Image (cartoon, rainbow, N blue to C red; front, side, top):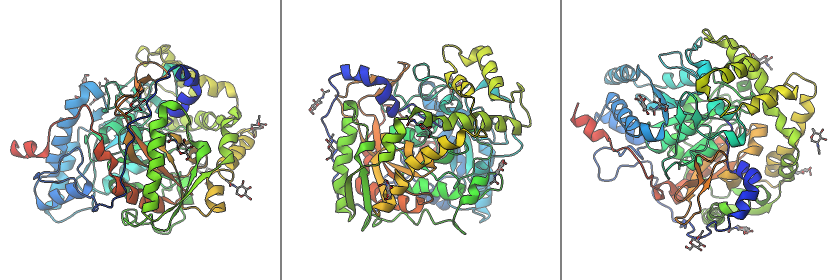
Length: 564
Ligand SMILES: *[C@@H]1O[C@H](CO)[C@@H](O)[C@H](O)[C@H]1NC(C)=O
Ligand SMILES: *[C@@H]1O[C@H](CO)[C@@H](O)[C@H](O)[C@H]1NC(C)=O
Ligand SMILES: *[C@@H]1O[C@H](CO)[C@@H](O)[C@H](O)[C@H]1NC(C)=O
Ligand SMILES: *[C@@H]1O[C@H](CO)[C@@H](O)[C@H](O)[C@H]1NC(C)=O
Ligand SMILES: *[C@@H]1O[C@H](CO)[C@@H](O)[C@H](O)[C@H]1NC(C)=O
Ligand SMILES: *[C@@H]1O[C@H](CO)[C@@H](O)[C@H](O)[C@H]1NC(C)=O
Ligand SMILES: CC(=O)N[C@H]1CO[C@H](CO)[C@@H](O)[C@@H]1O
């Protein structure tokens, strides 16, 4: 749920990168401000929707007309997963019941019983979102292999109720990237799951920690997937894998039976290929849950219609602010900033007012005070113990972070000490948890910086509808206050980009063809407005279509239907 991303690269690699003179600035992505028809379909001349880009509306209408069945869809997606499994390791396990659930969905559809737009539609879950079925919920660790939960997580239960077929679990950065130090970890690696890679460049850093969810949605290994974010883990892998990601307000989606980092910052959200598809998934998983009392802060009697929010004219009359001081100034991300700069004309052409060069003082205050990073460790020591406490089967009798640390250090497949446990050591040495009196000044200071001197203050003081930034710089302030983000594809790194490896040196973080995005930030529970603006922007740009993966599966619905 936290990503090792470009922010880390700025701070940790600043020196190394300064030596790396030839970072590319050319081949800017030109996004003409030309309105197109609502692109709710990937179908062109083909009889079957190509699965790399198939939208929910394509899939639902094919199921409705009998062109294919939900069983066909499951078979096609499984074949696609297996085609790229060896290289990308995006999906940790398949649901052994997926085909029988799909068959039931087909039967009920034949009887005229359709649960909703997701009826019979295959979706993947990040492997930290528990299901009470034949799949495990490991957060990528052997510590949880064989563990059992008392019931489905609330978001999984809601997906089932909406008729979706839970197809499998996606690989992730182990413990949502809350285990190892920067130089010893890599996005998308887990002991149980291996190393996930992105599909846009060989050995692409898939970003994290919802790495497998990003790669899987990106290549059409399912209709869409769920990820989780604590600080960047939906936003980062969505941008690096050419996707739309919605990081919902903390409290809009239940975290019950989701392996936690922080009750204050964790949230579950969709990673999909279009804004409208993500909105359909968000609508299905949102809402109050007595088992996660943060959801009692939902201010709506009935939820907004996130799908209807997808309105081509949603940018008309809006004011968007550009906080230049939050944007990563490094030379190696210049193509991202250049494309972002050019996109401002699209906002203007669509009738929005761009308030450029606003300064969020809270950003500078927050990133210059290391004490303010202590929210996550203070929550984690408490919240991870609460998760273990809920298990009905706990194979290694782990009750606390010290138990987990000693299991990990003693279990060979956990790859310790090559992959260290520095994040846990730090949390344990801190001696402050979220019940300590010392916790509150830290939390309230960080909240004030990210809120009043940051997002909330800026939106109010300048009457803005949203703050927009390149997605690489989006996650941190919203993380602290639990506010939402919507990221949309914007462009890709140019052909002559100099390759930069991750901290561990085993993945390519900056490389040609790697996609990047633009993010819309807003006040708590402003998803409806952010989705509208993101949709209008997406429809004007369609940047996802301008980037092609270097590897992709070839199985399509046509061959599955013909050979059944
Ligand atoms: C990449 O090509 C562009 C011209 O298209 C040029 O301006 C830029 O300097 C080149 N960058 C590198 C790293 O060679
Ligand atoms: C994926 O590949 C691995 C070997 O790399 C294999 O062990 C595994 O069975 C494959 N996954 C599935 C779902 O078949
Ligand atoms: C929320 O739930 C937690 C855990 O069940 C409990 O400790 C806490 O007191 C509850 N808070 C509120 C405000 O109800
Ligand atoms: C983007 O725009 C800002 C503000 O106009 C400018 O300072 C910056 O140099 C531009 N960056 C790139 C890469 O074009
Ligand atoms: C950092 O924030 C903490 C918590 O509010 C505060 O006690 C400390 O004085 C701050 N440090 C600096 C250098 O401002
Ligand atoms: C918003 O206005 C308040 C009151 O004037 C001020 O303290 C705060 O710094 C402003 N926040 C931002 C981000 O402009
Ligand atoms: C389906 C898939 O790709 N899952 C793989 C994730 O990575 C592990 C370890 O390499 C494989 O065993 C899984 O099969």
